[in-house]
Image 1: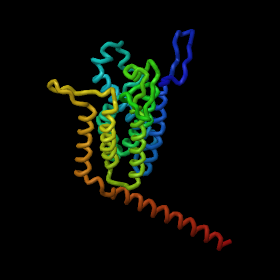
Image 2: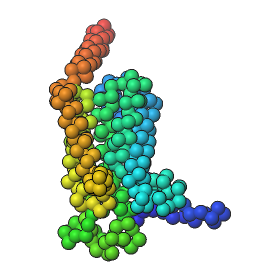
Image 3: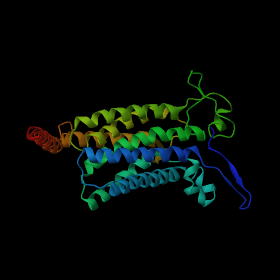
Image 4: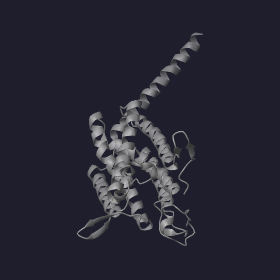
Length: 299
């Protein structure tokens, strides 16, 4: 709707500096995601130092960025990118990141990283799931400021009129539309709260990642009819909504993972570590208290 934070002309170089809210929201997501990663690594007693955790966060971010952009460009090549200057393929600041592509990018990159670092892939996917859904929740407001990924024209009370020149107004022509990106943002925040609460249950590694795939796939499927920018697979002259097809695959994979690994059971390894560390801390506190008492008697 208002894509630029500010606009400044630089006369000597004949350029205009126009940072976008879209990029700002993703920067905020990255900063918060970094704090979540550091917090969860410490809570789960994962042997990864702060620098390595930061590197992992950046890997997840760029894997999602590349995957999301590649997905968008491939599906929209014949509709848009094939008729634009080639540099437009890399113009992520203008929008155009497909979340299913970002998820697939992370799924491809993470196993490689975890194998190199000898980390539990399931545990790291749990952590990344919280970062991903929160990033999606915040990032959708970038779609709002860009005036994109909205729904059809509506008379419903939530309808919003987008300004002339936006992607939405090209089909709405001044009529109110469903702000689908806001619906999804609110849904994503609810999923994040769910995952944030579930993390304290200390399920087997992988449970949060599976719940994320399940819950987001359901949310996206519910909102797909309220989007005007849906993409399709074409198989033998038959159009299949890509969002439905990929969501179905993710739901199937998540359910298979949950039941095969019995992820609803407690994580015995993590719980034992917590018990041992608490016992050591309690013993240390008792020794300190005893030493203080001995000094008082001696005095």
